[in-house]
Image (cartoon, rainbow over all chains, first blue to last red; front, side, top):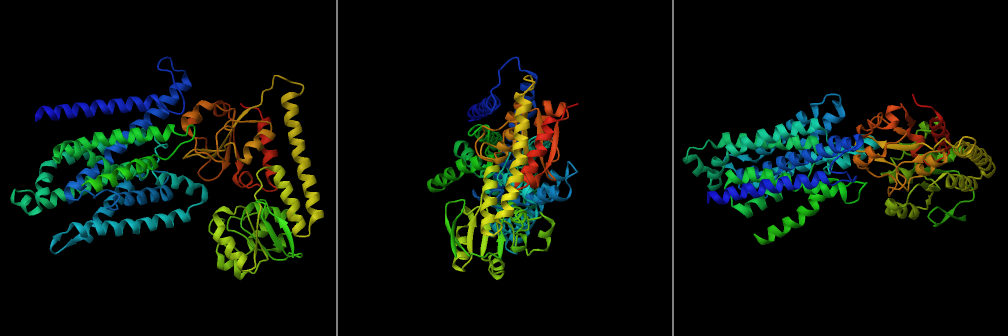
Length: 317
Length: 274
């Protein structure tokens, strides 16, 4: 048993390294392996490398957030998008863009705030005297999502045409605006988020049996819930602030991970982080190269792969 | 009534005397004013900001989402639109109301001249349109001639500068093979850096942008496009201070002021760097 996990870790980490290697060696420009000229070095280190690293962090963030929300809500369909977390972050980022463009930290900060606020609202709406009901929660998520979407549409209508074009791309998930700063911020988010969420894996395992049973085992259910909501907001907030709404990652990746190694959250959460990184890095490689020198938004690729795969998984289960 | 052909080859029935028209594109508004028929416009879009007289004309929404009720209420005889593709249902509704829909979508300077002539014909301003076209095409030929003289004339060592037109900084949009600006840059004496990239306004990979190393960067001037993208930080254009802002309106509207854009680009291309 233990050996199998070591093997899984090994396979996953090697796959991530291979994916990163593949991603940095492909792009719209062909670069030699050695003896890069100054401009080629700039292309590699200033443009391609940060983008690949950011893609990895965004994928890890979204997949980890999805995996832990699914465990907490005991619903495999729970996903940052479904619960309105992503839209909250998107709205926060947009407000930062429109009103506080001069502050570097406004985007991730307001995205985090937006994600947190959306999560909190959904949670309050879903809470009833009888406790937390999963159907109510998902429904509240849908309501919050559509409400936030309409505000986003309203905001985009108020922005002028040039900005609008930027935002349509951004809303679909776009990694072309990656900088090393964006990468550091998302990296900080993903390291903190994944460690904290993995530390909650044992109580989450118990809560998957049932919240009452978990309480009997001494799990502070309310506290775990706040931690998961908070960390998921942090992860989704930093990811969305850096790259817009890259869809389906939080849904597909944890599914595949559970399919491969079962539902023990001590493994599902960290494995989802790595698998999510692989997924987005590969998807963005397609986005960067498929119609080079033009580009596709990465969110279109993840949705293109994610949606049919999701339907297949749904039919099978 | 008489029949005319619009730019899509559609046959459109328009009244012999045209007194009430609306324009759903800023480029068309500018063309109609340029031939002296601006007083016939009873409705324009919120984007129509030139000439100044447009301020007092009723606004009927923007090009993508015109307000159909308002258009019908204004009782125009003809609606001038720049594209019919996204407006199919809209066109049908207007035609049912007896409002003709005329599509004018010039794709280069010569088509602008041709459409000015057609508009002149429709508005009974043929003579004015003809004079305008003669003057505009004269200015344009002068620029073309000079540009070629510079490149191929006395000094053979002068190479045509490679020009990158930045439409939007983030995400990075530029002009492609189908844009009238690609032809315009060529006429102004430059080599458009992205002339082989498909479509009119492609989103360009920053890797490609960095490897293009243009001599000149032209920014379509808008709030979010005041500087070249960071991908150009080591380019010749940035190092030599050859980054120029050109009014976004004259760059984006295939109307009479495209000649202004041509002249402005040509004069920037002649400037020496630092």
